[in-house]
Image (cartoon, rainbow, N blue to C red):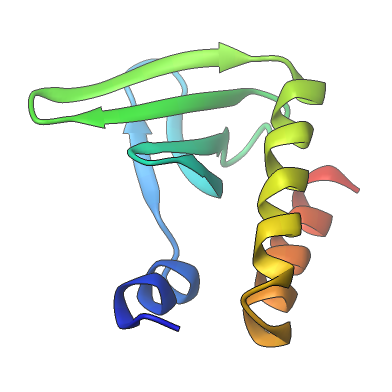
Length: 96
């Protein structure tokens, strides 16, 4: 596993949303895009695109968020049981 990918998996990521407060990263979605959820009321999900001048927050429905997280679980299976276990635990805490 590449060192930068391992660091991305093991480190928690948080963002501060101007209205909803602290968000935590649920899963990566694509290059430069991640899925985040509100920290305290875990039913508001955002696709976040980080840019050089800030972040773009796109609210998405629960089922779309779950779909993105499930795709991440499928990708993580190929990276080994340790990485997959971390993402599985976060998935379970968020969606079950």
